[in-house]
Image (cartoon, one colour):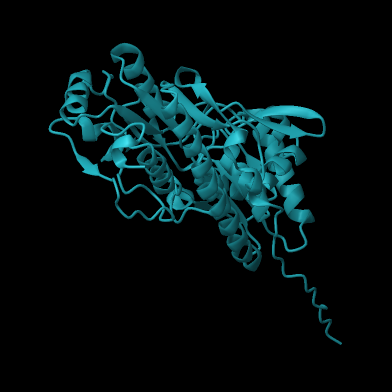
Length: 411
């Protein structure tokens, strides 16, 4: 079939990435580009998210170009630019967006991002009639995709977003490595993990052998803190090697003795164009209080951007291709204002288009960790969460040093 006979020959599709980077973004871009090109589209890349459609525009041609989908991050780069008026930037930049979409003859826009990026796209679709398709992205895994997890006859609404599987895999490896230094110094390590409002990613540390975890969904009130310190001391004293790792989400709400309030720890008071402040430092606060309260040496480890960095892992690679197949379906039917999602939690081999669906971009929102995934009393994740994660990471393989040497008693 000649190029002129393809369904969308003469049309142009553009892709942008907004918000935080993930290891699966380049895989998403390449997968969407390939499907769109097969349908006859010329494919452009918009650099730096919505910022690339401001001013004179920052557009590149991705059609028939080599692309490394395994390389993490986004070759299109990203920003937290909001085209609509905000407190930080009261000027509407929508006219600039519309001008450049027309100037570059862009017929369809695919936005890869979370609730903020895709929310702005949906608003453009509703108010300006711009044909858009959203594509999910977040390592926090808190984008509401209405993905069902079937477990022993019950169904739990869960989430699987591109970026999360690779981030989770990386954190498992990091936690496994941290264990050796915790054991060497008989310390408690408090590992701080990204997660502003949800504990999905923090839960992945379980597969790296962490003994306890704190998540944003459960506030650490004054009373709960006292119970937590008791449990930490008990767990530490029972441990054979007098060491342990506690995983905490960066968005944990912690009781402050000075202010008498329960709040997050802020790394900066500044907010981005979507009104989000930067969190950071809760692990240091908790480690310090553990040392003072129960007299056990505790140190903080901020994992920071580690989870977002590095190569795309196998599950993410296939997941992005599967969701891109659904994008092709939406393009063929010209069903805009939608976002492809995985309809149920499946293992790697079942990542196929028939296990996907599409939801309205206006109904995305955020999804907290379900209560059944976290044991509030014991500060740990439940077997249900382990089953959920096993579909993505297989079973945990924690390496241990199992020798127990005899103690020498002087004669």
